Picture 1 (cartoon, rainbow, N blue to C red):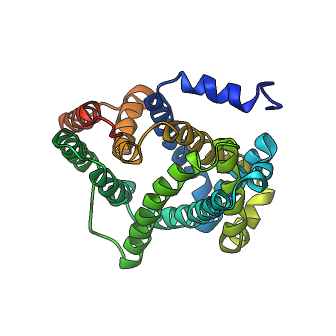
Picture 2 (cartoon, rainbow, N blue to C red):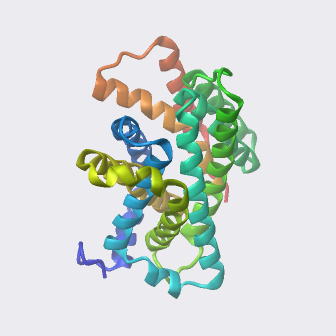
Length: 294
């Protein structure tokens, strides 16, 4: 029973099953780009590792209050527990590497490098000329949307490629967590992983975040980043992954930069260029052409 809604988890999941999985991914993509807007406030007040700590720990606290996920962890099978622990480790290191990378490189470059892993996963699951063509269209669209610049320190690129590898592991492990134990809720399993991540990130970022604990603006921005970047999108991902093949989800990652352009048009009144419009059209065409494999 969920104390906030008064509904059982099975009722909530059956309601979620009525929503197309693609809609959850679009929702995830939208919130994925709200987080960085709050992070701008944090970078002016908190060091990079402290931002990563605030994001993960605030998300872990939300899950702890909302779901009490440790109950699902201890009720899960040994294999499911191992997957949750591994995903928690990925959450901690992936976010740390991501913020280290964007502190020195353009976000477009980091996004382009990050997309390499999902391309490999989508390619592994293509299994038809139609899906190969869909992948080609989405890759071309992402290439046009992202600005891949090979200018920056070698260390920054190491952070970016490490983030790309970890993002690929996130897709693999989060997909496994969404289906690992029918006796417990995938959202509770996700929450358990986030609490593990909060514990693991503390040696890396707690000291740098300490000054923010007495700064109300930094704390508010940190909570906003955690909710918009690590709670809502990851919950939506779990609801989508339960019903989508892993390769299909990997292909849908191409919607992230396309969604950023659309949000810029709607929210910021930014007029896209002809190239950006063509790129979004390629991504949408690729997603529409793709057919999930069994």
